[in-house]
Image (cartoon, rainbow, N blue to C red; front, top):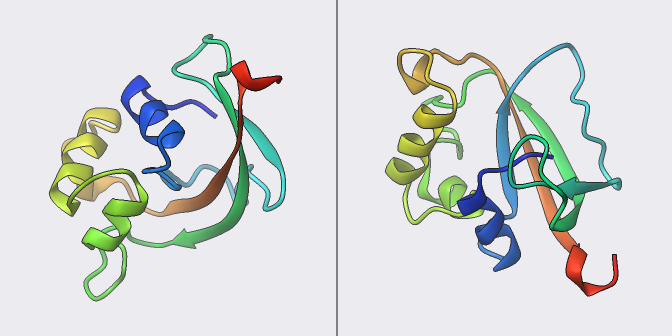
Length: 119
């Protein structure tokens, strides 16, 4: 699973335990209980492994009254506030505004191990 280097740091420090990604296809390709490599960008070597603990599909990341769009969601993403998450989202998915992305998957995970620690 690819992450920007700053998000890899957040994963390794335990601040990031969720990733939110646009829906592509009918089913999420990430499966609960499976381990995935954490890579700091396309073509980069893995630096850790994470295990998916929950996957949910949301029709709108910015739905009013949802836990999405909250600071609680942003904290799980490794950010201090929703605004910080929204700014990062716009740099990753620059489709005009963050609100034009459509359905998303939220993928919760736990750090399994760092690659430098025997794997």
